[in-house]
Length: 268
Image (cartoon, rainbow, N blue to C red; front, side):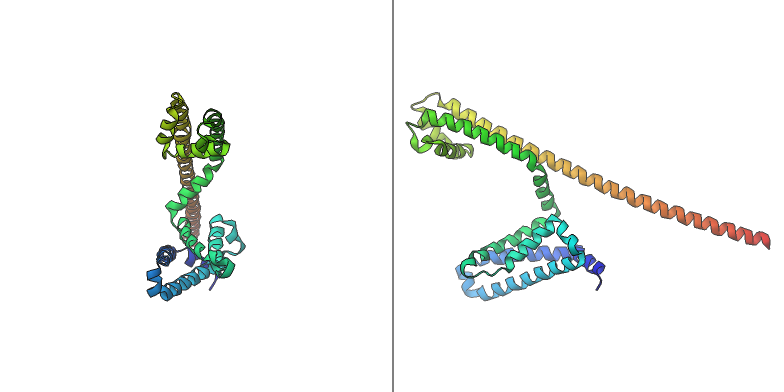
């Protein structure tokens, strides 16, 4: 079978849907293996199913490698697929027994095979440069408020603000809004104005930064979608232009045939 036919086969929607079904089914069987009762009764069958599905995944990767050649590794998603399947092939015994639990990473292949999930992940990657600066801003806010908290409350509340590390951990808990009222109320019994400190931190760390984070991701998703849409329009325009060129050639050919036919009739 030629490379082109294999390429068409692995890219077919029906084949991709088959792979998606296998990924979902394999994720379920791996989850069932966490139950000792199920493993006692169906353990051998689940392990056999896992090996069969892994073999199909390996065949899929080999077919793609044959069809695409070296260009297979030019696509980041293909490298992701290749890495996931390779990890599953590593021996999972002895010191490497922990690798057996990594089989669940095969479920992540859904991201590549489901277009909507792939679009979300690609949007997140495109937004990373901007998100890095959000994390820098958040780290700066944490550092400033940790220093202030340690100096203000460290002596009286060492378990929360005894040092810079403890202060950062306490502020992280406060940022998640988990038990922050308990901490703030206890400190406010001795420092009544401490509520200003906690309210400012929550507004900056939890609400402002989080909203900026969401805004950047949403904006990037809109830009990626627009870019994909423009690429689709450009492809369509290219196809239309090619068809117009073919149509012009056909018209010229028909004209030439008519002229030749008229010349023959004139001669007769």
